[in-house]
Image 1 (cartoon, rainbow, N blue to C red):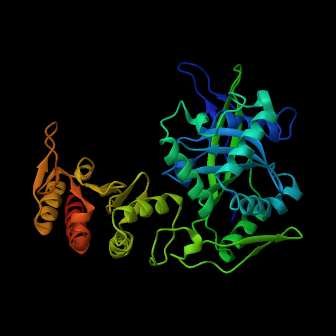
Image 2: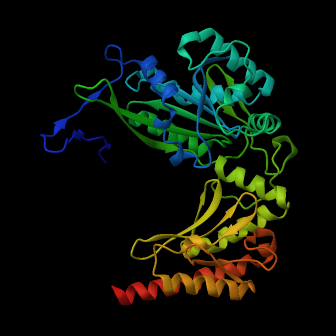
Image 3: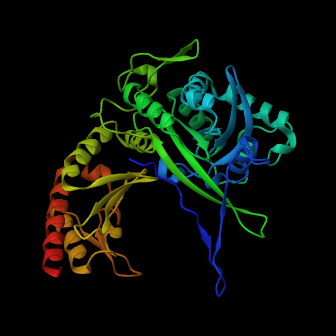
Amino acid sequence: MARTQYSRPFLVPDGAQAVGLDRIHLGDGLYDEAWLQNQIHHHPECLPIDQIEPALDRLVPVCLEMELPNGYVDNVFVTPSGDVVLAEVKLWRNPEMRRKVVAQALDYASCLFKMDYEAFETAVLKARSRNGDRDLSIASGQSLYQLMAEYDALDEAGFIDAVSNNLLNGRVLILVVGDGVHSQTEQLFALLEHHAGLHFTFALVELAIFALPHLRSHLILPRTLAQTTMITRSVIEFADGRGIIEQPVPHGDARTGSKLAALPESPRSISSDQFFDAMSEISPALPAKIQTFLNAVSPLGVFPDFRKALILRWTSPQGITCNLGYIQRDGLVQTVDVHGKLPRHLTEQYIADLANRLEKPIQSNPGNGLTYVGDDHRKTLHIHSIADDLEIWRDAIEAFAAAVKAYEAQDG
């Protein structure tokens, strides 16, 4: 099968002739690895984080070239919620780098997992001091938390705890960013994903860069080439440049620091881990109950979308994807968003049926009149009150899906 690639884009001004944009290939003149490194440092929004780990907040670039015992990480980002993201910039045309890029990323991960908050903060501040004017806003002696001052970050104690826990659990996003991909890299990545139990998320990201004519700017097109979903905690050791993956630690083992008890094995991510951690704070039994529910609705075509909340998405035969409800990290359950994309009489029927099955009242949004399932003691449903009745929710979803399919078959 031929490797996919970007076609030449065109700039089409109103009332003027279309102008083709020429792609810039890294390694030509000023456009080297350092140039791309600075681009993603100053414009981290170019990285397709929403495709890789949707729950991660805005990336805050904290330093360039952070020193680790085994080398320098090109770009380091931290989110206001305490997530850690590393990015390594590579020119894919460099054969040596194509052979070493995945092993190098694993090597960085193994070092990062051994760091506590103080060591991580020290490394970040040291890199900022060393790189001087390459950083965004250098202030000598700043703490890592002070770099988050202009963002809506957690309180300081919560932020430190979040970063510490993410380092302890290896809950880190590692990106390898380049301007193209070669089959050798894809094969190496596939081999790694098949054999290694990874706790962090690892992704290959391509940034295609085009020059805009007559403007001092560039068009950057990002895409995610591949990413891991395996998260089993492993201990990674390196000898002679080779990564050795030790036997994974089972879920719930005290060495992982994880709050999750033994859940059914399924693809998980940093985003889903964060959600299940929040559920376990409400009740230790909730993660297993919700996972069982997700396993039960999967044959119906319902898939979980882990963001700041767990969203239950379903696509009708005609290709309309709707939100059947979502569970927030504080435990509130929202069902009002089912309205909008499908016929109102079907969504109203779904809300009424779900409320009847759960023996809960129907609430109505005073602004637009849209209905949702509420609770006897509060307007919004809480997961704790229906945790033992999630099979009933599955049955309501099955009935709703059947009604939509029948309607679309008749309408079509």
